Image (cartoon, rainbow, N blue to C red; front, side, top):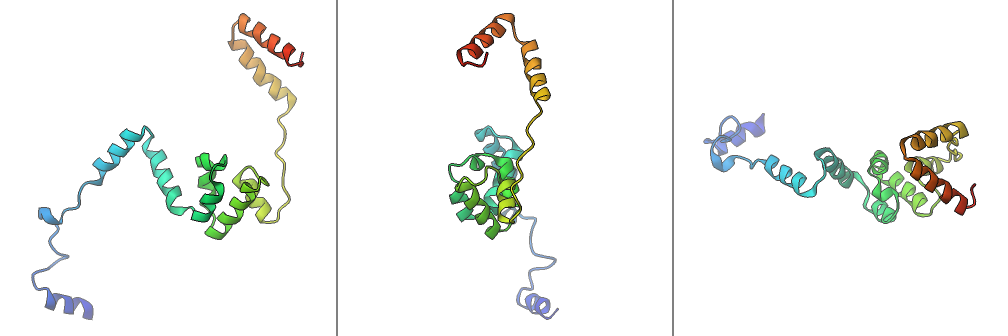
Length: 156
C-alpha cells in the first residue's frame, strides 16, 4: 500500500490505472498481422500456433542435434519432445541423432533406462486385408500392372 500511495503522490494525474482510452495508449490490433501471416504461409492457424509453441519451448542445443532428422520435420514428435525439460530434451535428441532411436518415445525410454520395446508387428491377416481393400478400388489394368511389378521384383 505504501508504494501505491507514493505513486499517487508523484503522479496525481493518473487515476484508476491510467489513460487507456485515448488513441495514443491503444495497443495495435495483432489479429490483422497474425491473419496476414496465416494467409501468406498457407498453413492453418493451429499449425502456426503449434510451431510457435515448439519454437518457444524447444532447447536450442536439442534443436541443433535434431537438424536434418526425420523428427525435426515431424510436428507431432516435436510436440512430444517439448513436454520434457531442457536437459532431457538434449539427452533425447542425442539418442535420435546417434540413430539409437527413431521416435521421441523410443529415445525417452532409452534415456530412462527402460528396455527398448519393439512395436508389435502388424498381423499378416491385417496386412492382407489392407492390400485387398486397395486392390478392390483399382482397375483391372492396374491390378495386372501390379502383378507384373511383383514378378519383376521376384515376389511372385
